[in-house]
Image (tube, rainbow over all chains, first blue to last red; front, side, top):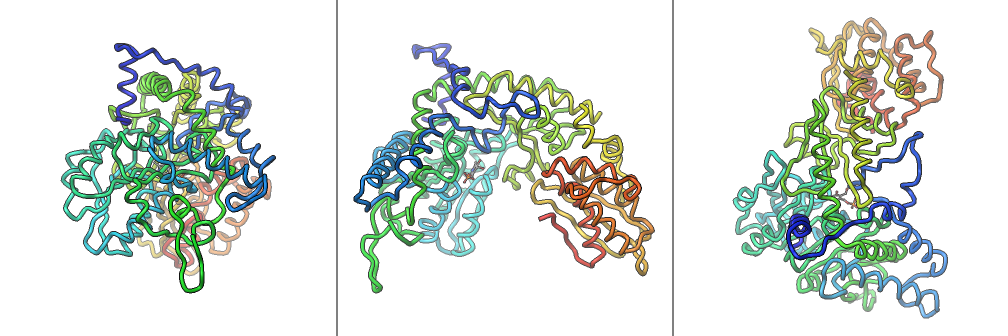
Length: 426
Length: 147
Ligand SMILES: Cc1ncc(COP(=O)(O)O)c(C=O)c1O
């Protein structure tokens, strides 16, 4: 099961027969040109990968190659450049499908990102299947992009948005979740990993509970895919949305995987070129998957770049990613806990490298500015999770988040700059 | 730490930590809520106005050092000022924090310490939130947003 990978792999690394997986972080760092720069005269400690991950050279090269050599439109083109671009686009879809653990390729749709994917499901599935009194169940830790689309579709259909509780440590309260399920629950939509707290949600268990009630299970995989990888079949979910830019790939591209038997029955929600079979003024018939949900010229270079990004991650392997991250989470948690006046927000047992915290006497925004001057890139604010902020009674947090290129030096630099900020505001 | 001291001058650190007029004036007769949707900072400004003159003004809320210090120094400065004086000063203050004009202590007095904000475009809204809110209150609006 995908969501238990970090613990199994790290335990496996110490105890069982699985080979020890090491991630050569210096080699990885040399693949990321952005890491070579200095910021305000300091080494760059990039601790904002949860917002956007940096891009390896292979992704940049793939995008540049598409624009340099194949800059033509895809599909229906009989000329050479168009054929080459089409082949590359469909090869990228195959890579992404494989990355997501999909048995088939056509049920992977290219989107603009996670937000776009969730909106697609909310509109094309939700609006068609929800009626007044039905319920959509989400959790208290969701990103706005897994709240607002459901709110909108609830408003249109008369369905109700129901919120499952989160514990003080930032875990999903599974018993509370179960109590919120009812025979009216038609859709369950939760994050794989919280972008604010780093919490890993027990997706397979949630999917079982949802399915037992006959609900469809949607996953916001924006943060799950880059840290844990995705295996839609092992997770047993019905939709999984992810973003390229959090996965070391380009902006403006993402993928939505859908369970084929559900996906292929859905009517398109955007009309236009590319998604039709035949058009007349009297009647239009629609193309099948995936074209049905890809109206208009797709982000071709983006999709190809996303293909390169999943190749890059697949080569490293998520066992190595998880082991590396687990060690850094342990190191970072300890280093931050040693800072007097620091209050961590989000202390789930199963979590990825996302550290949200508050400092006594230093507002997150002031901290963000001060850290930036020391080359440390973090994020300060509500992280598009205002209901979660309210749950913890804070207006904002500072958030440092890790990527595959993160090191202990990044954390040391963070801690040093936090100390400096504290001195200034003491 | 010197580069940061340009932004976080002593006056700002002091007012950020110990804001003045951090309470609502008695018998206030106009007020507005200010909200910075980018960072979630929010404050409420209340004032007692007679004719054209702000007799008393105070604020409450939560924000970063820059926005708290801006509110604190603004309320200190605004007491006894007319609406047109406040409009004029806000315009000047705005040009200074956005880097369109150099901070001149003769014109700005204590408010000149916000000159360093011009180097930090992402923080301009922190410095102007309280001013927008006071302007909204005086104009009889209920809410101000920096967006
Ligand atoms: C958990 C989570 N969900 C959804 C999103 C939205 O992703 P995107 O902006 O790429 O559509 C993000 C990114 O901010 C996120 O962290």
